[in-house]
Length: 193
Image 1 (cartoon, rainbow, N blue to C red):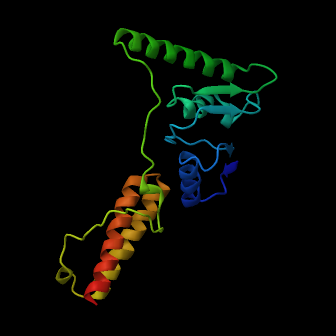
Image 2 (image 1 turned 30 degrees about the vertical axis):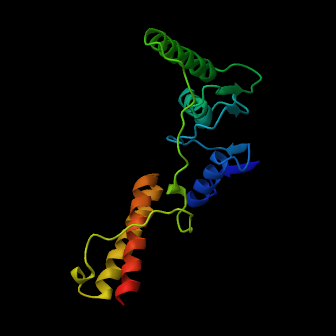
Image 3 (image 1 turned 180 degrees about the horizontal axis):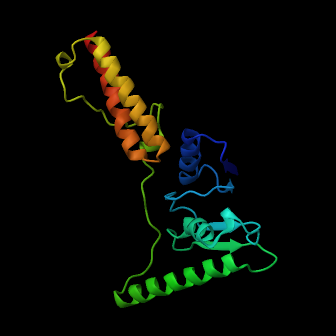
């Protein structure tokens, strides 16, 4: 069991999600989280505790979004724990039912059998780590393009700032590309220096 909460920084969060996807643990407890775009096909159960406690994290939209974490798994299930069914819960269940009917009808019409999405666990989550079978990247520009090592350092600092901004914006693939450019430039500095 691992815990995910708002005090965990972005890079740690990425490591935790990667470990879940790799099967290093089976249960991830999210505390007061609301994340769009958490694409984790291995999630087969979402349990929402205190689903009847009205508020931002229990609005119809939030319940739908949180429930959606199980949507990429063909066996995905959502459990709402509550003492009563609130208006938000009912709206979320009605909307989910409506969407499922549309998807079911489409699948029937096109002879589609739902399957769990298979998505590779990429190295995007391995910022700053040496990873086996890491592809080798090269810088397209020749070192001579930079007038000095200071120019190269300025470019690297700029790329690092851009990478951190991409991480904060949850643009992990862009951040990984920038990380690879930075590593290639640093290798070029060592080679040319």
